[in-house]
Each structure stands twice: as C-alpha cells, then as structure tokens.
Length: 79
Image (cartoon, rainbow, N blue to C red; front, side):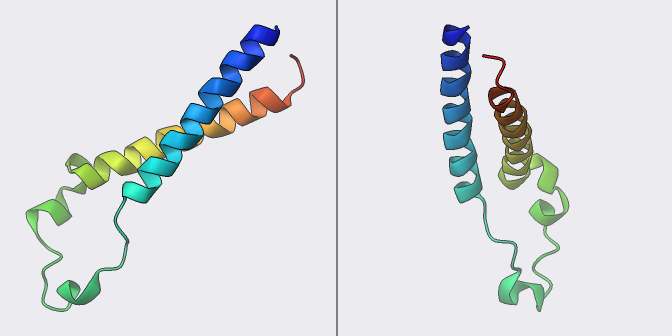
C-alpha cells in the first residue's frame, strides 16, 4: 500500500503544478476599454468554448475536480 500512496502523491503534485500553470495562462476577465466601443462582440468572444481560452477553462475544471478527489483519497488514511 505504500507504493500506491507514493504514486498517488506524485500524481497529486503533477496535478497541482498543471493547475497552477493553467490558471496563470488564462487572461483576466476585465473587458477593458474595448467593451465601450463594442469590440467584445467578435467571433472569438461569441465562440469562447472553441478558443484557447475556452480550452483553458475546461482544463481548469478538470484539474480542480482531480485535485479535490485526490486530496480526499490521500486524506482518508486508508494507506
């Protein structure tokens, strides 16, 4: 069981690093002065789910879920 705990701890650390990188790669949510002139209604603004920003949001969600699940499993004390 010690080997399994070590493997899960290494995976947990990798997920922590991936979560940090994905969050830092995201842009801020402030619209800036472009929203005044209507520049926010571009193709990329309407199709955010298919853009790089949309992919980063999905990756953040997956990393957070894995982080919480692994943190709970490692904290159970069954190892």
